[in-house]
Amino acid sequence: MGRLSVGILGMMELFVSSMVHLFYGFYIFSTAVAWDLSQGLTTCLRLSNSNDREGNGKAMVLDGSVPPIVLVHGIFGFGKGRLGGLSYFAGAEKKDDYVLVPDLGSLTSIYDRARELFYYLKGGRVDYGEEHSRACGHSRFGKVYDEGHYPIWDEHHPIHFVGHSAGAQVIRVLQQMLADKAFEGYENTSEDWVLSVTSLSGALNGTTRAYLDGIQPEDGRTMKSISLLQLCRIGVIVYDWLNISWLKNYYNFGFDHFDMEWRKAGVSGLADLLLGNTGPFASGDWILPDLTIQGSLKLNSNLQTFPNTFYFSYATKRTRKFFGVTLPSSLLGIHPLLFIRVLQMTQWRHPSDVPLPYKGYRDEDWEDNDGALNTLSMTHPRIPVEHPSHFVVDDSECHPLQPGIWYYKIVEADHIFFIVNRDRAGVQFDLLYDSIFQRCRKHVFRTTSPPTVPNQSIS
Image (tube, rainbow, N blue to C red):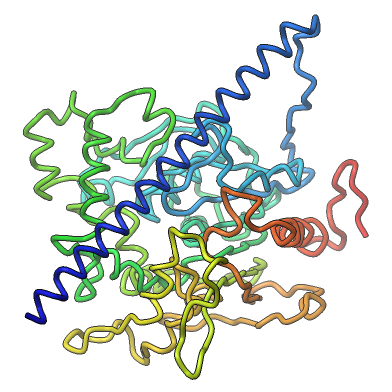
């Protein structure tokens, strides 16, 4: 009877979680469509009432005089050009004249996204690497960028990177690839191509939510047969197999290099994908295994904090202690998409019959969270080796910033507080992104004086 009750409760929770995520996805999609229709109508009316049909907007010129700031989205995210005019970073990119917002695979692995980011910036055809592609069962080459968005990128023309959620790990993996000279045909790359890394709710050490959503804690890779991630897997496979061009142009999960569409895979290929015999979910070359504690430990084992790069992290939390018990800190302040997960993550306990993911693991250390990631995971790289760090109470403590150290702050917010919907964060939105951009422009530089940004005064 007890097992039956637990099973029924589990199915009810799965149904509620599925519906909440589905409705939120439809909300985002419909908002993007409505915005596009509105903008299209506005543009038509403006053109019909004006003889001046030339755009007055000034094109962004990235000539290296000012290091660009690259905003890297997280899981289920999107860059400029996807979902119409909707902005993943809620318009924060408009706060500076030299900002790029790449569109990377929203569910592809950290490794694949790092490769995509490199070619987005330098230009050329995305090369996932022969060995990796063979092991994971996908094409070696992907999208072609006829012109890179910052082709002069090198150690003399470095970049500021800002990553939200999984985007932070993408940046770290990319920097390590640059240090390891891992891009064929580019023998002169180095870690100094990255001037600074800012992690915003960054998945630096994994998350216990991956297990709640369906990843098996035994190996951090395989999925439970009935779970939210299984439903997600089926939906993504069908979406990619159908390959409806206008939908794929509007939003893409990023698995084109797996050749999952019906013209190439056929009906038998769809069956193999659904049965888990082929594709990214079979090989493990997708993002969720990278977000488990085991997956992050494996990634972090090969990632360094470099002495000439500046690091800053914002860790978010929506929990607090009540009589010694960790609970959600607010009822109305947490997004409905995340409230149940905030509560569940505070109660997560690693199975007693499963080996601990790392030496020294304690459940209580992972209780504080923002509904998607554990606060402990977001401050700085901790496993398997803790990297140099400094907890920041007041910004004056980190001026001047020292490279090679992870400065971090803890902010009261849920995981999506500073993205997509600017109105939710209100004034805090401006305070946070202003501090990020001002740090990049005024306090992070390797020369004796900061670069002069046109039309801005440096003080």
